[in-house]
Image 1 (cartoon, one colour):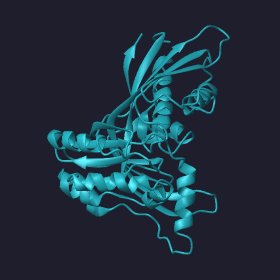
Image 2 (cartoon, rainbow, N blue to C red):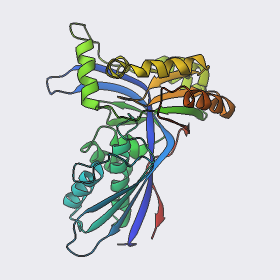
Image 3 (spheres, one colour):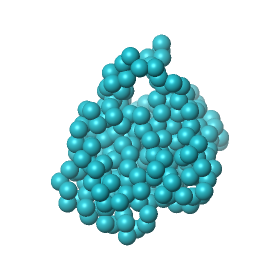
Image 4 (spheres, rainbow, N blue to C red):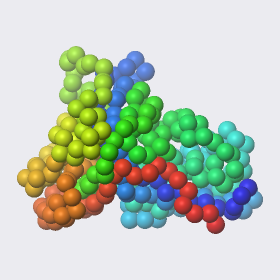
Amino acid sequence: MRSRGVTARVPGKVNLQLSVGPLGDDGYHEVTTVFQAISLFDDVSISTGESGSGIKLTITGQTSGGVPVDNSNLAVKAAELMVKKYELSNDLVIKLKKEIPVAGGMAGGSADAAGVIVCLDSLFDLGLSRDVMESIGSQIGADVPFSISGGVAIGTGRGDQITPALYKGNYNWVLALSGQGLSTPSVYQECDRLREGLSIAAPVVSEQLMQALRAGDAKALGKALTNELQPAACSLRPALRLVLDVGVDYGALGGIVSGSGPTVAFLVSDDDHAMDLTVALSGSGVVSSVVRANGPAHGARIIESF
């Protein structure tokens, strides 16, 4: 063991595209998505505990409210999986410092699981490749592999089969946060209800969106943003339509519900535009808080050993 403890920093994400296929016989939907990691981070720290103490979890940070501290937390699930797979000591103290919104469609729980995998690889000198860590992450949740890889990537299957995407430039985001999360399974169920009786094609990557990314064209990217779960999220939470309208009224290049929501991500042209939209959304009375972020951001990485 190289050190007593390590800290990993892991990004949140927005889905630039989320296309959802029909409900499969296995109860899951095939999806095609394009992820971008953004500069909202959770810090995951793991240190060795006292002999026989088992896995202990503590959570702090501005978005820590409502996060489970038992073994339903994805960070604990990741630790348990790694301990079993690599026969590690389970005397671990896990500390999460949260900035990514909870149940906000930004993969906060998945980020924490990714951070645990990267931390344990470092703490116990396992020497795992990124591909192996992503494979382990896919056993925990569909968004975990991307939280490890970061940057911009295409996700297929359940979103867990990751292929890095070509892109240029950096992008400015304004994120309208909701005071109450949305359940991902509930949003998918509502999506199925809204599409009942319709013929749903297999999802494919948007070439318009990929061209915008390769060109570094934020304006074109804003026009290409698409999320097929957005109607379902807005059906369950009608106020999201008002949030989207405010962003459009203040000239956002594009607006989209991130993942299963309820976070609404607005792409803007520069810092000044971001500030104007932040002020407008904050004063609109339709959101609980507003944060700014940039992308793409790095994936899970160690930032400290202690």
